[in-house]
Length: 356
Image (cartoon, rainbow, N blue to C red):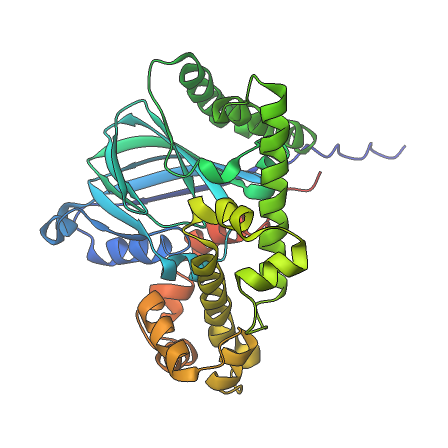
């Protein structure tokens, strides 16, 4: 009689664990380079690099990632260059169980204390200046939250203070999600992810006025439509406020209101063009294409102006970036990072997902 076939056990969510020891210069540099998909990172003071230590354990509950981490005092910057390099469209929730940080989001500064929950839009700039800390971080794709949150673009930099009822519930949910992650079957992960998004929507603050909620949802849908139209027409040098108003049938005043919290529609278009240009410059498939041709692909008719804007946004000219990329100089320091951290980057792009 044949032996019974072994039963296949459900696969646990992908787990990633990393740490670096104080005093190990190579590990510190790998940690810094590994942070590249998310932030430009450094110790709070250059002299503190020699005593810096940090670690994290994270789970991929596709499409979200939950991280338990600790670190010595540090500075994290998400700049225009970092945003272009990583090309991720995610929302991050951070709660410190120990320590806090000063937060700068597009010119607004605030202090985030132990137990506060802070929301950060990874498509927008921010700087975090942290003391020694322990934290939980939840990273979700924008597409997961959009059906639940009426005004997603207003959340960048918002802080839910410790002690409020919603903070208590959301922080407890994040801890429980992390604790239960190893036991979640692939069939449970989808429900857990969407339940988490719905809870975040409660934090976002649904309007008690039904008409207000309808208007807010309509505005958010309009912004999504505008953003899609911009990305689809980056190659067209004529694209600007008038172009979008004509194409989408919205007034100039409404268009400006929609993009006010994103720094204005003209600045948003410029940032998206420069992000697309960065991706093409480092893409091997375009290695033989002239920089001037890439500028045209991204809607820049004036190459010198393109070069100046590119350098201002990314810290080097397009030619310098291409040379560094092709020579491998960016392999560890910028484009790939430590192997384990590149795994984190793949997770954020939806790769390495447990099968349902």
